[in-house]
Each structure stands twice: as structure tokens, then as C-alpha cells.
Length: 262
Image (cartoon, rainbow, N blue to C red; front, side, top):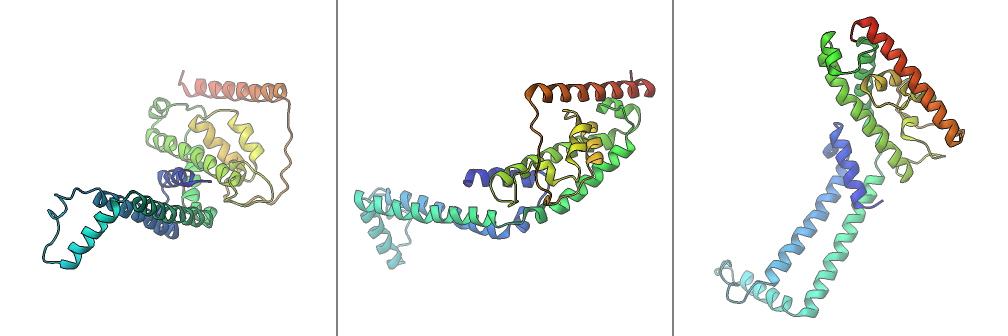
């Protein structure tokens, strides 16, 4: 994991509604320190490259100590060897501060951090699955049946559900969330990941996700069962997924016909 991974994960957390300033306060403090070091380094380089004629233009000439310090700094920075040494010292400090950011991030309890957002998200998705009729496949369908607002919220919630799934999978692979075995993100989000996948049937449609969440029984947790996965051949996996997707689509179309949506 590097600082860019941390930044990507923070962006995802904020996108789904996590208050990172509060829940990752230690990491945010380390991040601010790293940014401050970078700002000071930039200012030092700018002042060090300042021309001799312009040097006194912005100085408070009544502050003798400040004037002497500024002249001394510019004189030293115009020495190439000294400038290299200064740059190196700042780089070491910045690298250390960046490491502090990563270490603070990795020490965080992400299941605890995610739980309030996850629980509210799962509750809204479950309510949508139980309220919006089976067969609704678009905002237009939902509007005809007077469920447009709930479906619009579900579209956002379904995307956030997938964002959490992706984030958890990455945190497991990166060793931030430590488990006895390697798990997929969805296995930390539902009790029955098989039921979830079979109901989802290789679709990212909001209502398919909603029904899959209900089937899988949402629960943010660390799996304790040994991770035993059947590795089907490519052909077996393709045929199984294809058949489940066909069955799900056929059932949805039949429901749409019954609702008068086609």
C-alpha cells in the first residue's frame, strides 16, 4: 500500500458518507503534518531562488533579525551543494510523514468505521426490495407505479453498496483488514454470499442488487468460517452464470408483463 492507495480509499469513504475527519482523526493529523512539510519546503525553495535585487522588497526592515535570517537563507540556498542538502532533508521528513499517514490508516478499524453507514444503507436497500414491486427495472417503471423517489435513492444506494464491496476487497488484499484467509468483499457484507451471488445473477441492476442483499442477509462482519471455494472450470462457471441470468431475466419479464409495464 502507498499514499495513492490511501487517498483513493479516503475518496471512497467520503463518497459513501463516512466522516473521515472524525473517524480517521489520527490519520488526518498525520496527513496535515505531511502537507505542512511540503508547503514549508516549497516556500524555502521559492525564497532561496529569490533574486538579490528583490530580496528586500517584501521584508520588514524594522525586524533586523528577520532581515539577517532572510539574507543568510538566500545566500546559503544559492550554494548548489547546500540547496541539495536542504532538499534531501525535506524529502526525508516528508517521506517519514507520509509513512505516518499510511501507518495511521492501516491501524484504523474499518468495520467499526463503516458500520453506521453500512447499517443505514442496508436498511434502505432492504426496504426498497420489499416495497418496489418485482419486475421494476428502471426509473420509468418506478414512476409509473409511484415509486420514483425510492427507486432514485436505490440507484445511489446500490452504487454505494458496490463501492463498499470493492473497498473491503482491497483492504483485505492489502492486509489492512486482517483475516485468517483471503475473502471477497461481499463475504464481509452478507451472511450467505452464495445466495447473494445466485440472486444477483451477474447483474448490476439496482433491483437485482436489492433482492440479492435481502437474500444474502446483510451483516458487516469478519468471517470466521474457513474459506472453502469451489473452483469451477471456465465453462462450468460460464454455463452456471448464464443460466441463472437467463432465469432471473425471464422471471423479471414475466413480472413486468403482470404489472402492465410491457
